[in-house]
Image (cartoon, rainbow, N blue to C red; front, side, top):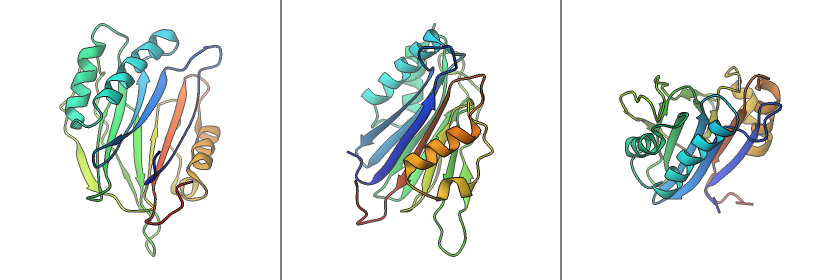
Length: 204
C-alpha cells in the first residue's frame, strides 16, 4: 500500500486499561502521505474516543492543508476530552516535509546523510489542546530525501532516544526498540516510524 514509504507502529495501553488513548494514521495523499499521531488527554475510554474522532477527520480530509485539518479536528472535538497531535505532510515529488504540532507529541526527522552522519531535526511543539484551545497554526517545512526517517511519539515515550537507535534495521524493529527502551509505566505509549524508500527499493 505504501510503496514509497516504510512504516511501522508500536504501542500499548496503560496497564489496566482495555484500550489506548493514543492513535495514528498513515494516509496516501495526492503528492505523498499524511502522517499523524494523536494522544487523547488522560487515558481510558474517553481518551480513546476523542482520539478516534480526530483520526476519522484526518482520514476523511487527508488532502487538505495541515492548519485546516487541525481546525476541522478542533471543531469536531469541542466538548470532548480533547487531544494533542502532530501532523506531517510528506510531498515525495518535491522532496519536502511540512509538519505541525499542537501539544506534546514529539516529532523528529533523522536524516540519512552519507559522509555527515545522521542529522536530526525536530518539530516545533506549541502548547494547546485540540478541542479546547489552539495556538497559532504555522507549519514548518524542510527538505526530505530518500533514506530519511520520521519518528513521532506520544508523551508515554521518553524523548531521549538517539539516532543510533533509529538507524539500524527495518522500521518495525526501530519502533519496537524505541517502545521497549523508552516507554513509561504511567501512560499509554505509541511510536510511529516512517522511512522514505530509496528509488528502486523493494516495497515488501
